[in-house]
Length: 404
Image (cartoon, rainbow, N blue to C red; front, side, top):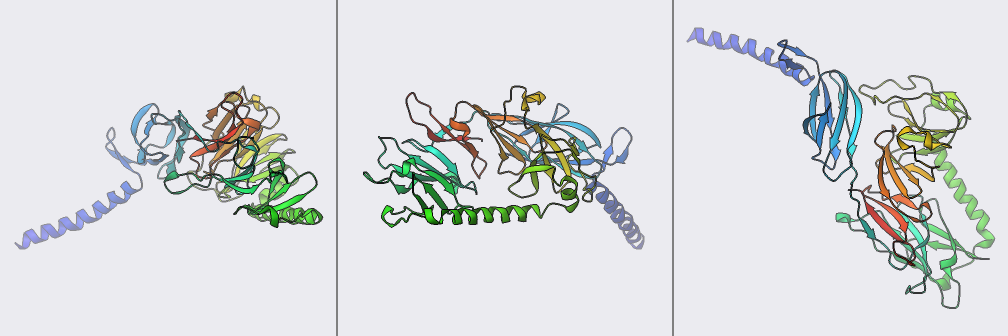
């Protein structure tokens, strides 16, 4: 009995450290190489996607489904993620030993559907600075109530959308607010509507009483100056978050800076040549392995990633047709951030495209006629909003185009 206890005790002394040793190496991503019989270091690919359950292919071979983790030997791989009914995603990735690389894929529907959000016409829509609301005018003779209307696109529980609501009604023999020009306040709570010789300040949260309105024309310049001051302070606050080394390097060389919704990236237009120095921040492990450009040139648009200190060329501002994979592109009408903060939203004539911040995975999410280049993403990133006339001799209306 004593000898058995000694054997068990010695076995435990040997097994526990040995098991702990292999568990630690396993947790670090090391796996048994069947050819050599030794443990070799691997890297981890975390294949995450929205929606989940997409197929993950590595160098053309099916490996698993999202969301899952794959152990891969260090090296370069072609990774593709597919799901029926959605545009596929693909990217050249570098896997490093004992480090985690994550895909964070957002798949867009291949068969978008349209849903009408207005039915009595929508003219001159203007989106609010917070991208949550749209004010538009209704002036068609068939409409029950002419005037200005507001549509909230911020979303509701279970994806139900808000119904448009009127914020000012045109009097039958008085002021016709449907013919006014609208301008949002920086906080998206008020709207100035300009008529021929009058200006009125409306609340965006209620139906305004025309009888209670006061002409603000005498104070208009002061109000607009205050609004401009608010916008300037907001921009200065955002720019103060940029690294000093970056600001010093590109001073006087960039313009049209736009922060992503999470304020971790910017896109900007270069107005003069400059060089962004290396290692503005301490390099992070497993960063984006797509090629970057730190020599910026005038007339080109770039994205700078504040977290990873990476700078990616996006497009030529004047000649987007030079982009090889978008040879038919015309001059951009609008370039903005998509709500994911990892994509850009690109509006052209009869086409809306979404692509990743590192200039990969361009997807035409909508192709068809829409009015005046009016196309914006919903804050939920599930739909885009367009202004279109889909019937002969019908006024344009607002439509939601589903993305998934």
